[in-house]
Length: 510
Ligand SMILES: Cc1cc2nc3c(=O)[nH]c(=O)nc-3n(C[C@H](O)[C@H](O)[C@H](O)COP(=O)(O)OP(=O)(O)OC[C@H]3O[C@@H](n4cnc5c(N)ncnc54)[C@H](O)[C@@H]3O)c2cc1C
Image (cartoon, rainbow, N blue to C red; front, top):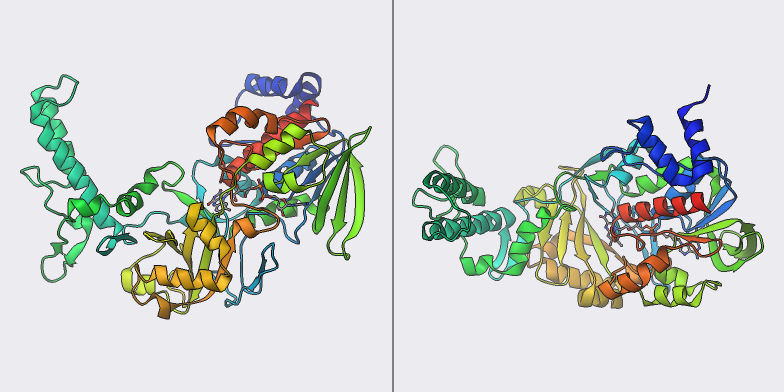
């Protein structure tokens, strides 16, 4: 009996991947739906492939090839899989390109970890969530937005719920006052206007005269108990217009930051470890590739075995997938065409970084009732993340800085780890007055200084996208390409995975 899979593989072998996808549609119910994003169906048993780089892009590429019965080997320079998908725990070491080394001296416990790169997964990133589901990676909620968390205003820290309620009150009052003057284009009946006023009253928690006079949404000045409660007074509109405040209160409106956000239980590297486990001995760790050359049959890959005193090795394959960050690939000794090498070199990578402390006491829970979420600083540290796990445990890892890049990122990367920590403590005091006494054992990762990444994520300019995106995605002879930078979901694991699926389609074709 011909199985659906065998039939599809036959169609794919004869007519290519598009024919197989069309057949999937015709068979009905098998096309990936938004709820089950899927890797492309590959013809079975293709030619040997070497994948270089064991981040999410390389791991996914290699796993799907292995599943389809292709001979595949994944060479990863580091002693662990995952690349930027990294978790740090007690005993780990962070090594920067200039030899600077930090040892993680935290206690050993399942909740005491830091994700220096990816940390959160949006609920609509169906690809990465699909692998988590298939591979049994347990997930839990990541609290991304928390009204109890703080934003640093001109007069000191303000709970985000107060900012949010104030913004809504302000906008609703302005809109309600503008209504009678007929500012809307649409013809509205008296009943429509009444419905709109009722909505605005609810949206902004306005009083019966359609004024924003404060509400318990903004928090309590006096909590209700035996006596009636008293809401906090509305914030001055001039304070609300401070960008740290309004950006902090509204950032989770963005689809990539909105609830529900997820995280793997115990650290983001659970995803990389699960992919690596499924790959088995197809994954070779400590294999640092340094040169690539075309051959008649494909390409030759030269690499150093970092576990055996850098012993030199080489092997050939019909196809090679380069799943490396652009600055890393640009620095290798390759015979890639000059326009591609130039385009790789021109791509700009953000020098984002993170710093975490171990805290003996979860003061954010004890004193501020902050359970997960993010506080926003007006200073270099930018964001403080409170753990969404280990609630009420004795200790916790507090992310004391998440710096996106720019001038603050360059300053962060330019400092020694001790200087970064000193600056983060000074900045953090603006949000938590007794911060210095609460935080200890800092660990920081400045991605621009990490030798196997050389940056946090790509930042395409529009002209570069127009000039180089198609070029960098296109296969070149035996070489195929994948990586976060080859997608429109840059700075997300989903982007790395989408690029891997695209590379697989290219391999299936040629
Ligand atoms: C600070 C930060 C925050 C982020 N936050 C999120 C988030 O919350 N959610 C999310 O989904 N994504 C997030 N991302 C993005 C996500 O980490 C990346 O998009 C994704 O992990 C990139 O995967 P990749 O496979 O393309 O590259 P990488 O992970 O960089 O993989 C490349 C691999 O190549 C290896 N390598 C390098 N040189 C060699 C060599 N010479 N030979 C062999 N192997 C080599 C490296 O060791 C590495 O394993 C974040 C990234 C950063 C830096």
